[in-house]
Amino acid sequence: MNIEHLETSGTFRLDGGEWDVDNNVYLLSGKEGVYIVDPAHDKQAIIDAVGDRKVLAVLLTHAHNDHCDLVPEIVGHYGAPAYLHPDDDMLWKESNGDATYLPLNDGRHFELDGQPIITIHTPGHSPGCVVFHIPSENTLISGDTLFNGGPGATGRKYSDFDTIIESLRTRVFTLDADTTVLPGHGDNTTVGAEAARLDEYIQRGY
Ligand SMILES: [Fe+2]
Image (cartoon, rainbow, N blue to C red; front, side):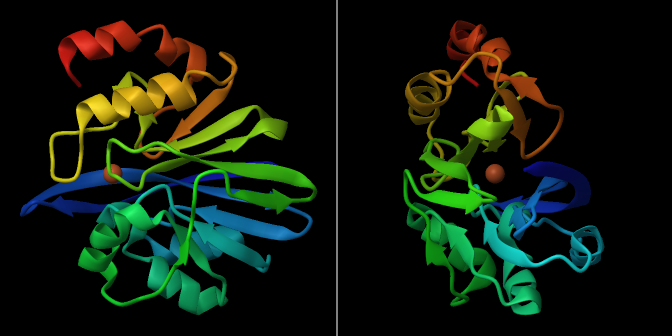
């Protein structure tokens, strides 16, 4: 499996605020086609990156607008389904109204060329946050659950710091320490590098 990366720019909106953000978009590709993870901001850049390959599905780490605004258009363009954890339905509806998605539950496996992409529910940054573990590549696509330097933000609505810490402790930091972490924003890290800083996160409270 190949993991391709592009960075796109746009706006994150929540609780009446607006922030400029750069998002990481990942294409998981193989002989059978491409899964697009979090197609953010720039439809043409994503279409150009996919090229003439078949899109198998859109996988969402959560439904903050910067990650999911474009999804109905991408789904319409490719005729592929989008998957989202249903605990983020209220956030999805804020961006996308009655547009449909398929429910993505903990433990759901997607296959690409015989290798699994495993969904792990990691609430905290939002209730429906998930991460995608790809054992064959020793890689975790972490969305906004884990960044280089700390957990995802928990200061806004539907977020909870104690919940994200519990998700990290029990569901992410139990993976191999040398697992590469590809986050939704910013630079890569590893499970081990961040796990070593868990007490620091807890002490500072973010
Ligand atoms: Fe987010």
